Length: 471
Image 1 (cartoon, rainbow, N blue to C red):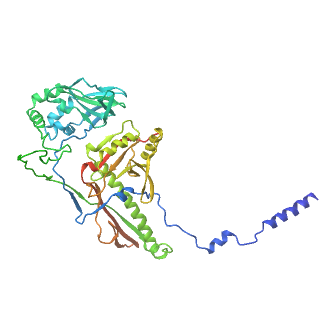
Image 2: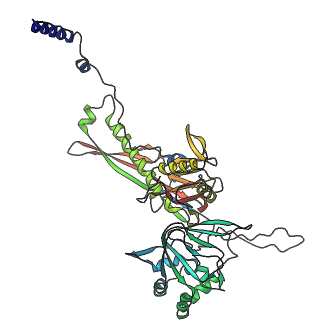
Image 3: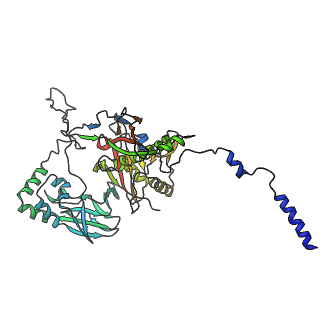
C-alpha cells in the first residue's frame, strides 16, 4: 500500500515537471543575438597623444632652431662592474665639465685607474662641510642627500645625487678650498673618488691634460646666460651719452632635426570572410579599427621610450631630479614643477606612481586638487593635471619616472609631429593602402602611422626619476 502511494506521488511530480511552453534554448535558434563590436583590453586613455599639440610636418623633417648654447658637459657618468668591483668607463669622464671634449684615451684610462671605490650604507656622511675639498666624487649607485647650513641655522636640503651624478670636478684645479655642503647617504651604494693629488700627478706628465684644464678655466663664464645660451650684450640704468654695446643673437650651427618615425603592419583578411561574414559588422572595418588602435598604442609607447626622440630620453640633464626619500611625495612634485616653472601644462605618470603619490598625500593629511580634462575628473597638483600614462615603464626594482611638460609651439614647449594629407589617409597621420589579393585569397592592407615628438627648449620637459611605487 505504501508503495502505491509513492508511485502516484512520483507521477504527479512528473506531470508538474512536463514542458508546457517553448523552451528558451530552442527559441534562441529563431532569434538574432545582440553583439558588441570586438573588444580590446590593450586600449588605454592615451593622454599623451591627446594633450600634445600636433604640428604639421609636410617635408617629413622638423628642425628645431635655437640660440647658440655652450655645451657644459655636465652629463651623467656610466660605470662597469665585475662582481663587487665598480669602475668608471674612461671615456665617460669627458662628461665632466673639466674634461669635456678631451680625447686622449690613455690619460682618461690613467684617471679612471686612479679612482678609488668606496661602499657605504644608509646614514653615512660621504662629504662633510668645512673639510678640505680635494677630490672628485662619482656616484655609481645609491642616493645621497646634499645639504648645507641654513641662513638662520638648521639644515637646508639642496637636492639629491644618484646614479651617474658627480660633484667636485672644479676642485681638482685652482686654489684649494673647503666643502660648503654635506653629502649624507639615504641608501646603501657605491661612490668612486679621484683625489686632487692623483689628478695633479697625471697632469704633470700630460701636456694635453694641462692644456685642457687651462682651457676649461678660461671658458666663457661671462659670455653665456645661466641657461648656457650665448649672451646678448645689453646696457641698462645708464645716464648721459654712454657708449652702448653692440651685440647679435647667435644661432646653433647644427640644429636638431626630427624625422617622422613610422609604425607599420600588414593586415590580412581572407576574401571568404570579407564576402560572407560582413553582416551586421564589416569585418575589414573592425579589423582595421583594432589594428589602428594597436598602432596608436605603439605610437604613444615610442613617443615616451624611443631612445632617439622619446621624451624620457630627451629631457635635459639639468631637468632631471630625484625623489628625496623614494616614494613620490608632495615635496617631490613641487620640485618637479620647479623644473618647468614657466606655464607647466600637464604631469604624466604611471598609474601606480599616481597611486603611490596619493598614499603619500594621505599620510600627510593632504587632499590633492582635481580638475576637468575633456570631461574627465582627474587629480591635479598645484592646478596642473596629473594624467595616467601606462607607457612610462616600471623597472624590476619597482621604480618609475614622472614627467612634467609645457606644451605648444607658441609656448616653446613639447609638440607632437605628424603629416596629414598623405596618400590613402584613413585617420590623421595614418594611411591604409590596399596591397592586393594573393594566391591564397588573402586580402592585404599596409597600415602605417607616421609621428614623432620634439622638445623645443630644454626647460619644457622635466623628469622625476627613481620614483618608488611599493607600499
